[in-house]
Image (cartoon, rainbow, N blue to C red; front, side, top):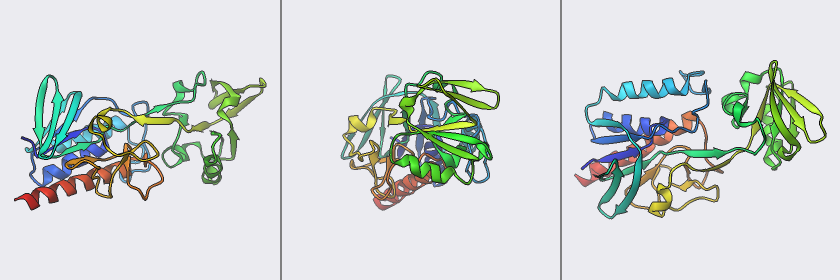
Length: 278
């Protein structure tokens, strides 16, 4: 029986595994190989790793985990999970594994506005986080394709970075084309707008079905409801990363630094729980 099983090999899951390994707790990390930032070449706003390729960050994390003999890593996709008062069963590759604690770090998936050509630039010149991708467009015009009240906030956040911030209803954009140094947005009146990049607000959903399988409470945002240490509404089940957030957050924090912090806090809570049980 494992003391903890972590589902998800992104920054939240890797950090949870590292923290458990440093405390000599028997943990298993299961990684399906699917990541929300799979199309991103360079991730930013992470101290000591600004501009790192997400794949390189994951590789470094795995290399570090190899130094801790109580941590096992498998490339495998979980098919089902079930919790009871004494632990959690995890089904993977036709095998049922038993663990005292489960950490869900499976992340979110994004559904982009259905604009032809937009998806081809997702993670590069099309992004959703100004903290992660705004500086790369410094001194050039950008577009905010967002019809919600949050568009005004994005415009104000990007104002010191970009030479111009144009807010557009996504319904007005008929297609997105590559331009010499950015993107060309073709509008519904056949006018065009050339920008260095565009920010969109994708519809996000849980990447994996495990929160629903376990009957976890969810926030209005669709993310799993947790306390500040990642505890969910089901005993022994934790959640970390952008798939979850506590009540005092307005929504999921889609940043590497926040995911890493959440993974560490969930692992700390598990270590404390294990210590109390001895």
